[in-house]
Image (tube, rainbow, N blue to C red; front, side, top):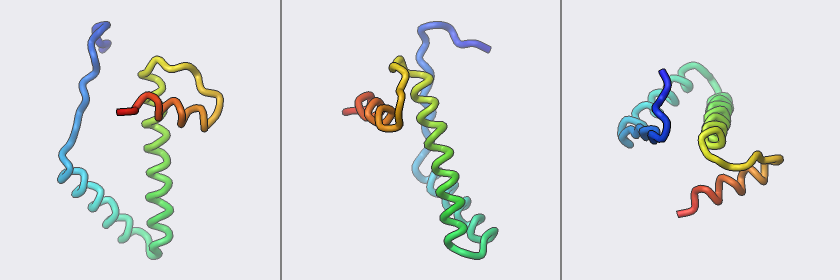
Length: 84
């Protein structure tokens, strides 16, 4: 189903409490699954990296910014777009 042109996408937000509970449950499950804290941290790091990449891809796909050629150019573009 396509969206009508000119209509802004709705921003869905969740409460802070729901996020904390969900994240806490995720970390608790990882602690049960892995014996070492280093393994839990590695898993969380991979997950965070993947989420960050998806967020940046989504931002660049939805905004009208020019194509970036390097990581630093991408970071500068994101910083310029989100200045208060």
